[in-house]
Amino acid sequence: MHMTKEQVLKALQSVIDPELRRSIVELEMVRSIDISENGVVDVTVSLTTAGCPIRGHFQTSVAQAVSALEGVTHVNVYFDVLSDSEKAALQQKLGRASLPAGSLAEVSNVICVGSGKGGVGKSTLTANLGAALTAEGKRVGILDADVWGYSIPRMYGLGATRPAVSPQRKIIPLQAHGVKVMSIGFFLEEDSAVVWRGPMLHKALTQFLRDVEWGALDYLLIDLPPGTGDVSMTLAQLLPQAQFVIVTTPQPTARKVARRSAEMAHKVDLEICGVIENMSGFVTPAGERFQIFGEGGGQELADELGVPLLGKVPLTMPLREHSDSGKPLATENPDDPASQAIGHAARGLIAMAPLELRTLPLATAAPGTPTPPSSPKPAGMSLPMA
Ligand SMILES: Nc1ncnc2c1ncn2[C@@H]1O[C@H](COP(=O)(O)OP(=O)(O)OP(=O)(O)O)[C@@H](O)[C@H]1O
Ligand SMILES: [Mg+2]
Image 1 (cartoon, protein in one colour):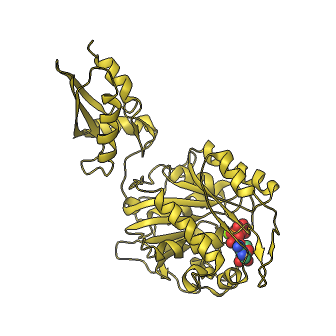
Image 2 (cartoon, protein in one colour):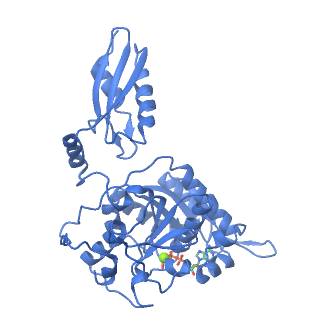
Image 3 (cartoon, helix red, strand yellow):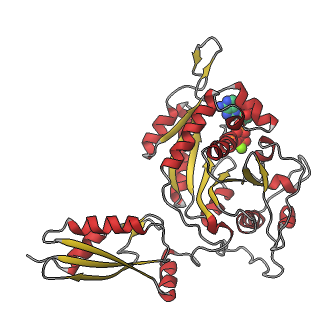
């Protein structure tokens, strides 16, 4: 019995492009299939760029999928590159304006840290995950997207300095403890509040991503405001490849609230990559353990979502104290139980991100958003009034 092209194509439906998260058949990336008499199958896959880092993934998965067919003796996988018009067609299919470019082109992983409700420790964990990933040798940036209650500048001991603007009119992020940091707090008088209206918020977040000189980063961590509001939606729109880490406290009610943010993430098509349980018990100096906020919520949420529980971070005084004094505990005292748990979560993130995730340009504006003037290019200094 001899296999047909249709059968090969059907087998290839199981090969998923890990970035675009769809089958290469659906994406029309299968250029050709040739079957010879002796059972050798040649498959040519079209990539979006020649230097595609996920080539190896396709090589293996295509060979595996096709070899499983009866009568196949050998599989050759070849690659070529989509033409510009094919790329445009692919972009249209994906509902995006264009393929990777811009400031985030050198950012490998974008991870949003969110929660259903406030005060669960998102900012503390973002700040310390940044420090822990840096300690693991990763290049890290933190974008404080909590434009109402920004707290990353304080946690990194960054105060009054306004970021400089490069000759290319890009905002240079401030740097502390080896991490590049950008926050609306750098542009405001201390404790002044901004009233954000929809389009303004969208524009500010767009600027944070597009007009900031992030450079080459392994991780861009984004500290979200509490809840499932505008900021998360805007970011999801701007960064469809971002991943989401959900922070929850251990009690069952918190889990329910946290699940809402998971539902939001699903709705806007962001991938949830894990859960971190924070305020997970307290150990007295005498070694007695108190489950102040209950128990088990993080694991249950993780199970429910089918993602790993990346860590259980205990309550410790030093974690709070260091946040307040501007020095991430993960850098200052890696032996603290909270630092250890955060380090564990950081290594979990590293373990699950072997891919160079590609980022997308920010040209797509939200419907109804006025297009920013193209000249002069918006620069950082206009942020608070943007
Ligand atoms: N594991 C912990 N141990 C001790 N203190 C903690 C811990 N996690 C967070 N905190 C403290 O709890 C407070 C709230 O934390 P944080 O500001 O990080 O929460 P958040 O979720 O970012 O809040 P918001 O929703 O307002 O942005 C801070 O004072 C922080 O230092
Ligand atoms: Mg916060």
